[in-house]
Amino acid sequence: MISNVKYFEVKFWFLFNINSNYLTEIIMRLLSIVLSFFFFTGIIFSQDRKDVDVRLSPLTLENTSNQRDYGFILGLGQTFQGGEQYVQCPECQFKGGAGFSFSIGMLYEYEFLKGIRIGGLAVYNDFSFSSKFQETEIKIDEDTGTELPVVFSHDGKFTLNAITAAPYIKMYPWNFMFVRIGMPISYILNNNIKHEKMLDNQSISVAGMEYTIEAVNATVEDGEITGINKLQFFMSTALGFDLRLSRNIYLSPIFEYYLPFTEISSNGDASKVNNWKISFELRIALKERGR
Image 1 (cartoon, rainbow, N blue to C red):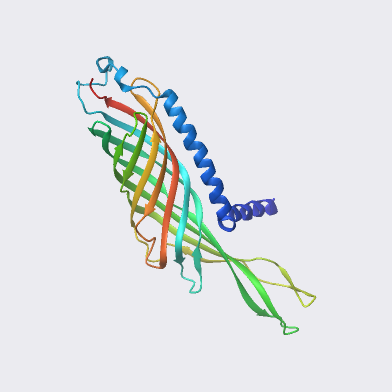
Image 2 (cartoon, one colour):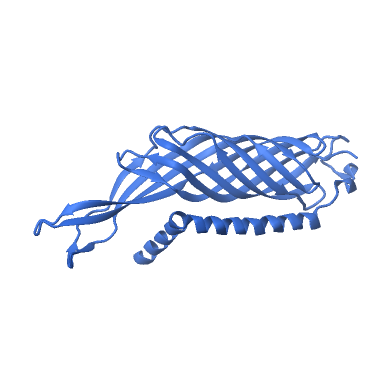
């Protein structure tokens, strides 16, 4: 059972770190398929809002030209690390990290002009990621004096949980499709680095001789990230489609990308968290555009 667990851990790490170019190609192909599906589904199922009789809505308080929506949002995606993040171990530098990401929250938006809205999101974001690297240490065999190149793996698990406020502007180039540009500001509620050092192989072969390596896996560090920047600033861009579920309820699939401006901590070299996700937004129109 342990060997199976270790196999899946190695396979997961290989997917996100070693074969990153291949993974990126797969992700982009999947996104193109998903976005094409959303696009054509939006065309088929979207309805012109001109057919809405606002007088029938119990939620409509008055006939107004400004639509107001509130709703809920759930997003699933990936965080990937840019730059290098340092830890307490002087020679240890983590880079190329990646991890599963999710967000959940609420939104409110107001139709400023026809086809243009302003609004805001309040969401809980998980920006956690893992990163690995290997190093070789030279050990001396006590019996023969032979230099043994011993390979260790370093595993860094970075936990970053944040609450995010994101004002945005939303534009409808078509009635069913929108583009959203925001400026998310995140406050890190919880941060941690767990750095583990593990022996890769219990035995190595040098000059035809087999040597057994005695080493103990160790937790090098387990605590808050040194020099953490608790305020994180981003720019977000999103593409979404409105699917009408009922008279005043919309389901919107969205692809969103967070571009970071702020480094994770002062103890690093341009170490930032990039994030993309596919979200599903459920909105209720309190006041729909008057006709």
